[in-house]
Image (cartoon, rainbow, N blue to C red; front, side):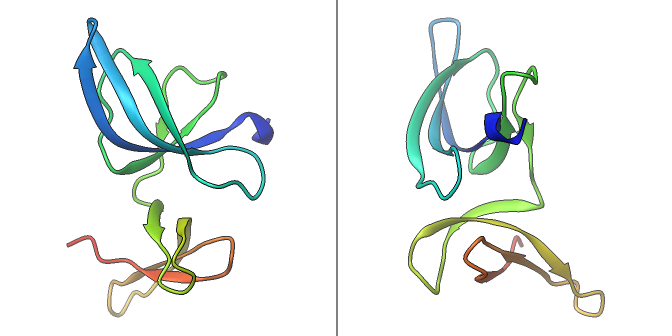
Length: 108
């Protein structure tokens, strides 16, 4: 089941032909690089967000606010960062990628 999941980063929605074209980058398989994709879709999705997509679900599932695609400050590569920890005292959230690098999240 996990092998059929794809992580999508929707960068924008273009209109045309009675629907939308999702344009962005996706990850597939283990240790992948971000590859470009374009896909027709009947509705727009929020841009600059991460979604999980599979043939077994009717529409991409948003992973906001627990996942984010960012350029890693440590290795200068675009990485998928996932929720790591929450500091109750400060309200800060940190994310971590598969290379064990962290991202200080600032969504204000």
